[in-house]
Image (cartoon, rainbow, N blue to C red; front, side, top):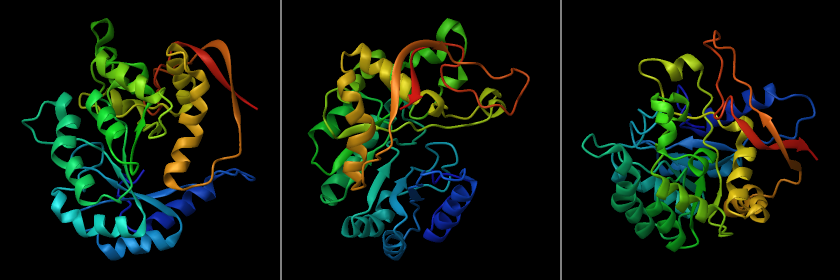
Length: 308
């Protein structure tokens, strides 16, 4: 993710971060980090050209300033990004979008819809050859926009937005901070629209976990941060959603085929297997404030990932 502290805004910073990741990998690992940059008002066409020529940067992320955790350096005015967007279109670099407005007078549940109306429609119109991924979509309107747009527009869908509606944040009349992410979970009608899109077989929609491993004390404090930690059980949760929709035969395409195809990357030839086997996701030690609590901790899941 580019929204680190400090944010990864240059190819040099992305290269240094990649080297840290590679140095931490176990011997013999085949994991390949795919780097992205953080788009700001100051990103230039030359920055884009350097990113593309590096061979390690595959996308540039657009965060409206203040839209998510550590997004203060994000875009404040779409017009200021036009030189960078034009260069991205020219060089074939993907624009990855956190699609929300941040106006204080806009209801938090309407931020994605209004972003599409105000900004995404304009971007797609003015840069028709720019490849765009609307990340972690949450609404019926977003699914419909992507479905009806050109082949240059795609979207990712997270496990939390497929499996849970906004009721999960307040289940049992308690505030459940680990279900608070941005864009926030929406109504059940929107969740069903996302399931329909994900399981449709349309290759514009593919996996994107938006996994956020915030420590427990950062999530459960008086001003807890947004983000759900889904990495440990993402495939299991996706499998539940696809099974409930009667579309398990389409899970592999959604998870492993459509994303690389859109980015022009080779398909991963490693494999995992999912087995239908009930198990309970352990909860971390409640006394460990530095622990990271995975989404669905304490719940029984129907699927388990095993090595193939």
